[in-house]
Image (tube, rainbow, N blue to C red; front, side, top):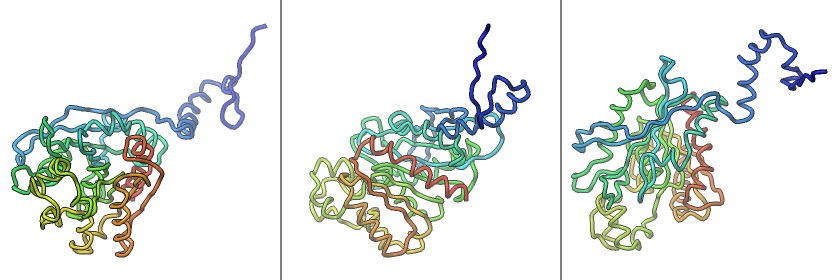
Length: 322
């Protein structure tokens, strides 16, 4: 006698005993619920690397990587957009997807309905191929290289013309890690109407004492172009530094600027930037600025950032849904 194998379905239903119409009904509904419970997206989104946006401010093209939701090509609707800024040193635009595997996380969270389907763009924050000096997403002190101006005057308008995005602050979030975490919060404070929320993982906020005592090659590489090359000790704490230090922005900018954007901070307890993040939290708390502050065991590395990316996306996704 031929054995018939029965597969136990939802609610104890044996799928092999259902008529074809019943199977089609399950295919249209129940597997989607199963996929959500198992953390699987129905269809993966698409990553496009080696894309370029022309910048008149910089006089060159700026490379970027972009994540497009699975239904982007088949739908006609507009999507919210999240700008994700990468870290310093050798960081580049593809890092969030190659090392952070952010696309896999996006597929799952979108598939589960926990965040809205969104376009995610990561621009290349390096000044050139040599990458001898970090941009920190700032304008140079001498005005020769203006990354911040490029981002707001050229890059964002280009991206939002090129892709079907929901226009305006309500459809636009920003996030970043390390140098990019600094950029996400600095931009939100300096451009208070730009983003619905800002999420920062292990944001590179240094205290005055850390800036003063930083080794000369380290200072020149990270901040020399933005605040002045070759500066030593207290001379580094000039007006330019005060204008761009997030810890100073909280005190120097109008309070309305600071309160206009909800912030999400997540920093490892053993991270070298923990002090700066903790001080920022205290300042925001004392000024009643809406924000979340997460402390978890961890260092300044991709293990930490991958484990924290879900919380950051859920924070931004909730704001974008509103």
